Length: 427
Image (cartoon, rainbow, N blue to C red; front, side, top):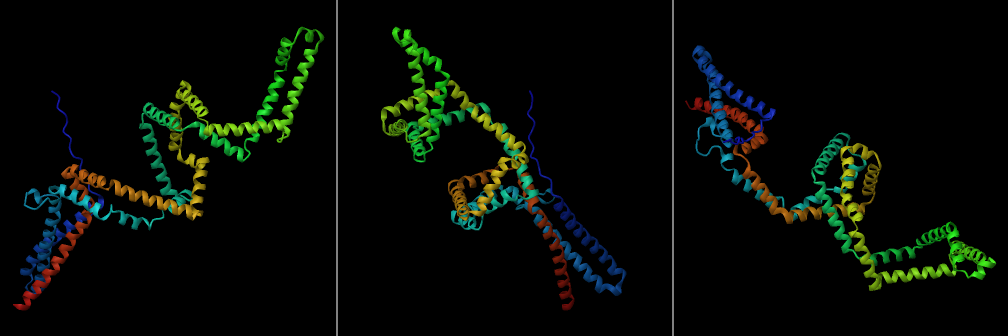
């Protein structure tokens, strides 16, 4: 039977600054021990200097006591001193659940409170910071941030399942298209175009296309007239005359409609457009026909394949930007972002709206997800291995705790001097 390897907690190594301060504190304690032994020996060797060496011994002796006491206190926070399971030692690993709960409750009580967040967010100019970064990003920090963010985005995009995401995007867009009634929207767009006379170039284009189609199909028109004319007209050649008159008349009519926007036929065509606009918005029968055509279009296999390819096309474009952010920032995208930064910088009203939106968003997140954040912190700390949490906390505050050992050694020595002086005075 194959045994699974035992997973061991990975203990983080102590930072160099912590190791250095630990050596300093321990070295000072050893120095005090050497000084104590040396001064004790020198008192008997030099009787005339007994008073001086007495003070030195008192200082070294009290310094050792203070240093050892603080060493015990600092060590007891994270482990059992000398491996001996003395009661009330290894405080952090033995109370990690309570530490996690207390830390989480502290965050909930003093940080994740809407009133506190609002007060602190009012001091932040998020829009100003965004504007400054977009228009004048710091070369070092901005570049590192951009590269790191780009790698993160690229990894996230590459990790997404293209087939599943394509299906989700297709489903979302298809559902949105089905929910949107096309006829009233088309009517509103056409009405806005007519109000601003943006339909006139379209009518001009349609008329020119009709004139071109007429010129290209003169032969077809002549054959149609010839086939439908009576034998007398064909025998006399009047069918050719009729065809010429018809073609010339249509060509002249189309040319006049292009040149004269007040032409009666063109005006009647525009009235027909007005009627179409009204029907698109108010005629149930036409709206139903447009909806049926829209459903058929959405269900068309070619359209479905196009919808499925939208995500892949978007993903490929985003990946190109993420893999080469400097090139993207130097191109049209960078120009757009810089213009956005300039707009934020020069439009105080827009900046205020962005800051207000950010403030409300953060407050909303704290209000809606504050309990979840607290629970996450508590469960994360509870899930840590005891050695892991001890190592992480010690790495963060251990250097300051080593200063406590140094201070305890020095202060203990000074207290020893005072006590020895008082003892001599009372003797």
